Length: 153
Length: 241
Image 1 (cartoon, chains in turn green, orange):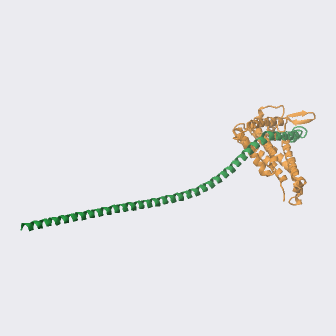
Image 2: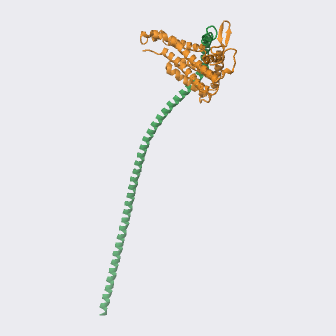
Image 3: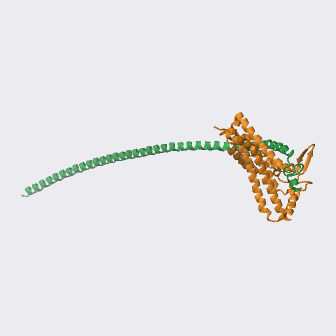
């Protein structure tokens, strides 16, 4: 009796196949359509939109990064040329100021030498004049002395 | 004596008893439909709640549903292939969700508390009708997939790589739905019976590890069923060179 219930064919039993089978199949097919419109399509849209968004952003970021690297290299070159330019200008200015300094120094030296020379000449002339005068006075004095001595005799 | 009492216990579990609905001349297993409607209703409510307000930054339920969607897509894509997996993803996903929800629903909800005039509520997949229905749908699907993708060239598959394979490949068309349906049916029914017998014999603690094992088996069976279905479809649409 139990065995009959287990594998029974008429009614009941584990392997009792009846109209449940096709109805369940129809139910699963219907569920497929319902889940497709309720779950797979909307979620797929959102997920794929986001995946596209992310991959687009990654591509964009990569492009931007390569652009930044290019700009960076450009800037480095510009910086280097600007630096060498600045160095050139600085050394030029240094040379120029050196030159100006030397010129000014020379000018001042010359001027000083000239005024020194002039003073020396003046001193010399005055010395000469004084010496002349002194010798003239000495001459006069000696003449006076001579005259007096001669007169006393 | 012991054997006899065990058999009576089995009988007390009401194996092979059904709640019959009669519509005209046809007979249905009512308990299968009742549980499947409750579980699928819960699934649909869960899904509509999760997809009600979809945002670009997923929150809460949407996260879970997107994870599920991604999982099913990976499953379909690896088995069916990049070219046609999109067409079959809803079917594979529905099989997975249906089997999973049925198995877990049968294992987690204490259906036994609801008394029926005949038979008892349980996992819809523990009924042979359900599993055969699913397996036949898989068979139809892979035939349809092969024929719609490759036309009559689909039948090259039967003589690939040599015509010696022909009888085996024809045999496979019968063994595929048979193994699919009986694997699922056997696993889920066996799990229900083992838990039922253990609860009947030792109502405390001892059945709990077996229940966990049952949950594990249930999830694995859902995965196996969906993966095999996808694999069969992938096999049918695969191009031989």
